[in-house]
Length: 271
Image (cartoon, rainbow, N blue to C red; front, side):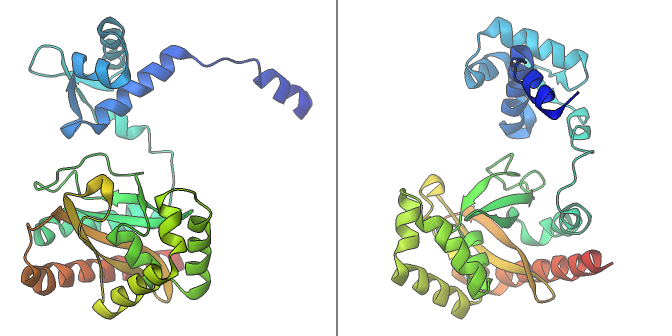
């Protein structure tokens, strides 16, 4: 069969509505704290009626992806969900090097941190300790896109990038017609941001990201040798951490983590 015929045949297939709804329920459950939610809550989040939601949850339970909780109508995710990602390979160094190092650093850092890589003018969270940190107020951060100019993690990466990469990232943002594009076109603001970050030795966000205006963050770049690999942040409610603790305790600990991830990743990449 020719490729043209295959493409033509593929065009006649319609969306399987039940599968789409089931995946929507799984994603909604994953976003809830602890991966636990009740039927009414999930129905609202997925814009479905309660009966349909209950039927989908029972189907997922029969397949082993969710279990019933202690309270009536409550469900929670099982480890079977994680197995769905076993065939997916993103940057191998994230799973083999960064993830174990970040988990080991939870006790020292206390507050949750994210590791992000640059993608089309944003930082995409590749790993996060929110699920391990007792102080986390966020869940399901992996895969989230964080604006480069408004977040500490984006500012740390941008300041550490060489001139060619930095200009390419900024050019992508300048083409936007929203607030992010406006910020990128403000050359004085961007240069001041980069200069301050380089002089300070780490990036900071004190609530400038409007979507998370109640939270502050610090961040440092991750280098594998001379190669800029990613950035690591530490997230906490504004005013929850003193300036002294930030500079004497948390930033040095975050930098040690970044150094460990960078060294390990370089060895992994070059092996």
